[in-house]
Image 1 (cartoon, rainbow over the protein chains, first blue to last red):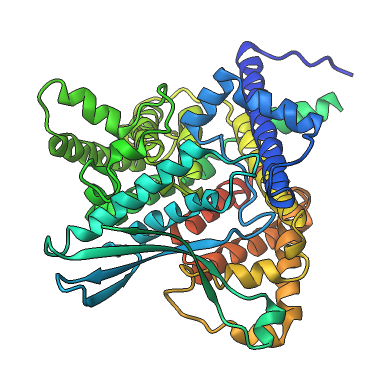
Image 2: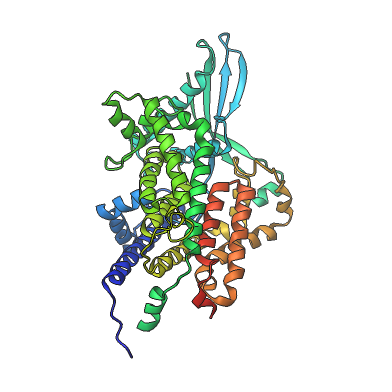
Length: 198
Length: 294
């Protein structure tokens, strides 16, 4: 059998291919573990598998982290998996100077569908609001940051109305019933998570 | 074995249709995607936006150059935020056009990736799957020469030194195969994908199915349909690395996956994401090398 001898360019190409494939596999594995633990151990109380730990360390190794961040390779591929995440809704109640309800706005409405889609992705941040202080992954600072974001959104809505109007922002968890419950007549429900007045 | 691996990665091909198609379609998609948010650009990405960009930027590591940091940097030289944003928009559109016509595409892709990352990472809460895949697409256009055909260079009859692109093509193909495998694998880990509940929940999320408003509630009376759709999705994705590489099933699997993405576009209204995934599939597995036909 003829011995294969790679040229300089071929060696370089193989090195690039090997490194990138390694990063892709490592990131995909790391994020698969992360979403698995996130789904089955909501309170964060689990013993992390050795493969999960290793892939996590590699993922966070600065050169790899930097490269992945700058090229989009820091993504996983489990879209809508292992579970379809719950969504949230912002509902704004607008009151006039006499405290009469004058309008209800469902979410922030932008000019294009794509802008609306982008803005709605922010709702998923609020999944962290469902964690309480007993949860191992609870982050008080981040929780306060989410409140700041909510205030900013409220300020934006308020700008559209006269100064003496008030805005009541309500953040709801949207829950659509399971197939079985839907067949029994249950409808979608909104659970109030947080309110803010301005 | 070694011979087969060598052949797999290094067999020479004179067919550049796949990378030409990729460059042109990605250039157009990036342009359209950017234009689609232009009317709301300032509301989403400026310091006067719904959420000021400097607030969005808080959790972003310092080593990532973001649009708010660029605005701040040029502010030191007296440029207003509005001017920086306007210049940013013009350059972004110009680069997307230059990429499409194949004007020094590797350099242009590099510059475009820099701007795209600055925009998306600076406001990562607005980001979703399509942004990661756009970044990776631009990375591939930096890595792989895409100007061998239908480019500014061929238009001017410039002589082009060509290298063997097969290793990069294989990397891209393997990447896509790994991506689908994990997409299916992550789904099969969730018990709600086994009983149809995940499909049921996905099609009833408050922000999907807005364009055609299909009434899916009827499916509650036929839950088997939802179970079948769930398992079909898992099967198509997890088996992708197997059937997309087998000559007999390649086309069929490609049509399955493209159909799945069309379904996602129509039902979930994720048009840009679906288009991008279809482009990745066509690029990697539609264009057949001549040696593969022999």
